[in-house]
Length: 127
Image 1 (spheres, rainbow, N blue to C red):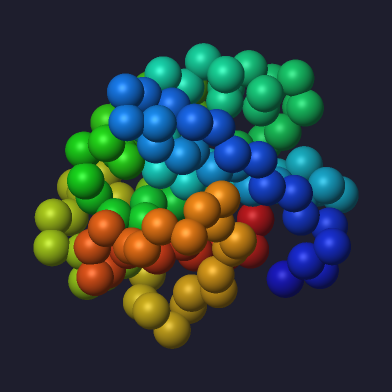
Image 2: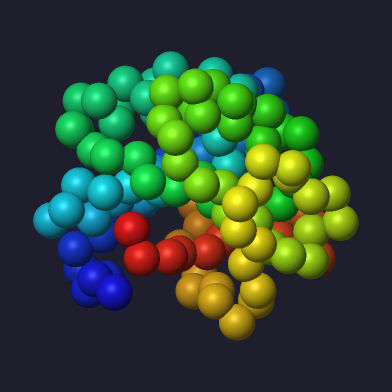
């Protein structure tokens, strides 16, 4: 696993409810993960291209529509796995890996809003 000081996180406010899409990347390898791809991802995808990042994973905090409604847009451009908590009551059929809580390492949130579902989490996996 890479050292925390090599990671960067950028947030993007998207959609009518100003959901937060996170982009996490390793500054050394340029490998990245997107968290909760929803709504208009133009700014996010342009940032990935501009920084010459390689998107490796989709991480989902939970399966509410406003957090997952742009998964297909990402998958059209990138053939990458989707990760979601295995306790999620509304599974994403395209998710290849279901994460157990023991694998979770929190990532700083932009706000102190409480989780929207009991299974909600931000996770980090080796990029």
